[in-house]
Length: 160
Image (tube, rainbow, N blue to C red; front, side):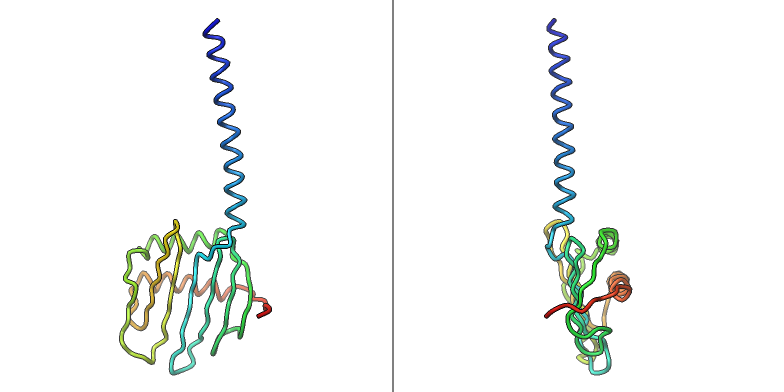
């Protein structure tokens, strides 16, 4: 009799844990897609030539804003959407090139070169790297990937 009661209690306990886990998973997925925390900021600065200057902010839910300045593809404030796969691809690349271990600043000292600032938040830790001229290969790869994704978007004019 005790074995039967014990067995029933174990089955109930495991089934209760299973339903709680499913509910928690659903809640986590919903909160991730609604998260409006900025996770990626990418900014290209001006130079003494015709370098495009703009700033893009991408939130965890994929909402992105593009603020085009001089010689940029789009002038002023624009909006687009990034997929969760695109955000994951950027974060994976950042981890692969050891972005979070990079110095905060790489500067060749030439003031006529454009400045590129990349800021990524991952696991509640934000790391920002500013580079001008002297850019490590891994950072170049990451910046090029982000830039290509930005250029591939259809940015729609937003109210400022």
